[in-house]
Amino acid sequence: MDAIKRTTSATVSDIIDSVRLDLYLARRFNYLSRSQWQDEIKSGKISINGAPAHRPHRMVSPGDTLLYHGRDIIEPPVDRDFTVLYEDENLIAVSKSGNIPTHPSGRFFNNTLSMVLQDHCRCAVYPLHRLDRETSGIILFAKNTGFASAMHTHIKNAAKSYIAIVHGNMPDSAYRISSPIGNDSSSTVRKKRGIDNSGETALTVIRRLFCFGDYTLVKALPETGRLHQIRVHLHHCGYPILGDKLYGLDDTFYLEFIDRGLDDELLGKLKFHRSALHSRSYRFYHPLLKKTLLLKSPLPGDIKSFISAGRQ
Image (spheres, rainbow, N blue to C red):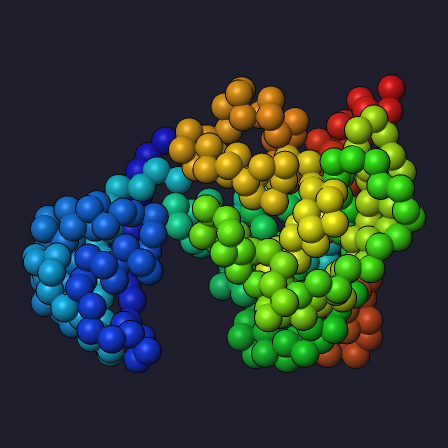
């Protein structure tokens, strides 16, 4: 696989006090450690306000513009296949696989759904909502900023349903989880979220569909749109999603994945190669058509195969 050279720019926020260049970079772009950023600075790959910066201890201040002239990055392979569910001159809605990020972030740039759809649509596209890399199913993109703005309120009011396989046999037919969500300060994984009484309000309705083996197939209906909401709420009520590395049986699985990838040992612990979560339906108002659209995406083959094997 060929490496790509990437250039990244950033403007230091007004809320940042003067801070060392290496420390600022390590905190904001944590895909490299502080020592690795020091090496990048010394090699001349960083400029500040157009001038090369070679000293890691140089201070940066609010308003400074930083340019990182890149490193050779090999992007992990992804599943670039998608199914178009709806398309017009302003909007495209697709069903994606469970192995592609929505937009550029970290190691991913070209191998993202945004870039794949940009080639398909022959124009820039703008995701209208979030969908995690390992979550399959429905996601909407605007084809221009004007329509993205027009859709803002309607996307917030969209009715969504998800299907998930969870660990354990869920005894009750329905749960209404209203625990607020914030950062999980107890976890060693900095990006992990959890239940926080001072966090954002969140509401998810969970309906049991059926149990099979040691698992339950559920439908999740999020009535708010918090980051990782379904995953956090299912973990909180004792039924973590199958294959979820961060909110599954043990969040150290996530650290193992970051360290060495999805090898046979980790797959044996997870029991499934990705988070078994699928965006099943999406009902929203189209402001230009002036009508409500309902989109549905069938369960993907990997989830159906796991269910079939477990029910034999």
